[in-house]
Length: 128
Image (cartoon, rainbow, N blue to C red; front, side):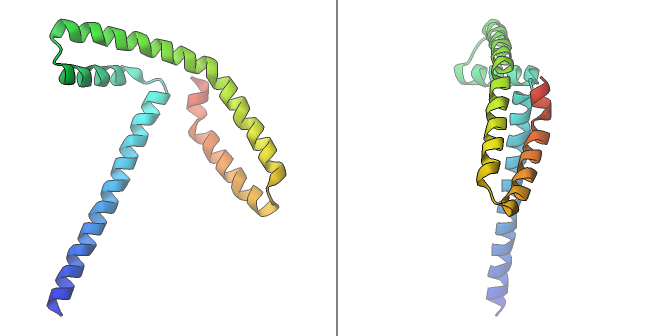
């Protein structure tokens, strides 16, 4: 009986560790994605440059040049995102309106909550 308790204890601890690790990894990835999508690019440019520097073994002068190139690319990406974002939002609004016709009343309630959650999550993204 003692062996089963010990084995069960180890399995429970292992599963709790896996679950906690999954939640922490998901939260970190979501935070990084949020930073990138919301135009908080200074940290991202440095991170990209650091990664390239490590992988390519760039010298100090190359690092500075690559950092400048990454920052310039990010400005272009931000401008492109600002131009495309209104079209994306229009497409999402169009989908929302058309989906309402297809859904049952009980589904509409859940759908409204999903749409509200999406809009709240991306409110800052929309205003960039």
